[in-house]
Length: 127
Image 1 (cartoon, rainbow, N blue to C red):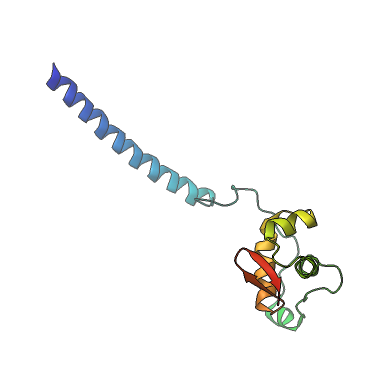
Image 2: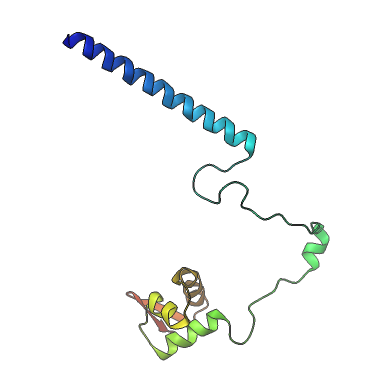
């Protein structure tokens, strides 16, 4: 009786392994046919399509790239908060600005590259 159970368990495990491989192949085929992305990211069909015609290479080169706006931009707001509160952390800056902190994890290092702020420990200080 024990040998029957052992052999049946082995057969089931082998069949499950084969099925897992088959599922993997089918998912890959579906992704290739549907043009879906595999792994993390946006779900298929969630991207927006651009309706404007693409610019030609010459037009793209002659168009000036928009730089940082003057005035009350998020980066300038963050810089002012760092100047007013040396040692402030990104979550504290986000709370003061009433925004999500993920944006600031890109902005403050960019300000540091420009030499406007510097990071000491977990806090940010004016340069």
